[in-house]
Amino acid sequence: MLIAEDDERLRAMLSRGLRYGGFEVHEAGDGLAALEQAHRIAPDLVVLDIGMPGMDGLAVCRSLRATSAVPILMLTARGEVADRVNGLREGADDYLVKPFVFQELVARLEALARRSGLTLGERLSFADVVLEAETGTVRRAGAVLELKPRERELLELLMRHPGQVLSTALIWERLWGEDRGGTSNALNVAFSGLRRKLGQPELVETVRGVGYRLREPRA
Image (cartoon, rainbow, N blue to C red):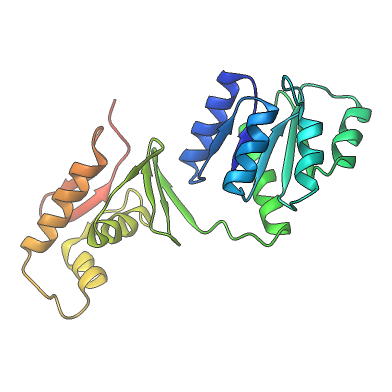
């Protein structure tokens, strides 16, 4: 996804929120940079501010439409009908007037993706951790975590049951099947690696004599 927005604070907020939601985000602070980025990375979605310096959003949209059918959501502080109509006539697929609620932006992007036949994939989230089930990519606070396959499987299992205590026996069955394929130390190693890579504040809790669960970070 490409976000083209000249307001640095708004751009950073949008990028951070969308990355938390599992989107891969690229940024541009003006129209020319947006056009260059779009040609270089071929984004699946574009969030495009109309009122950018130099080359404005309408011109960027018009240029993109000459070569691409990428879904475009336009942002603007202008609320007049004429401005919305101009954006749509230049090829925008949707339009959102500032100020807006972030959840509405995400919902509109997801709707654009569905209409365009894009598969965003299932995303699991807990606290500031996001796991893309289709690709296996895990992020915490927007940073990609390099997990081993067993660590990722363990995290996914816990994220599908947030707050629920999962017994050691159940985890063994889900991750190793009937053939345990090793000793209980393998589970300890997997949990140790997962905890270390997730970092602080800690999310994985050991419930002694019972099992493990994900819990919200403690203040």
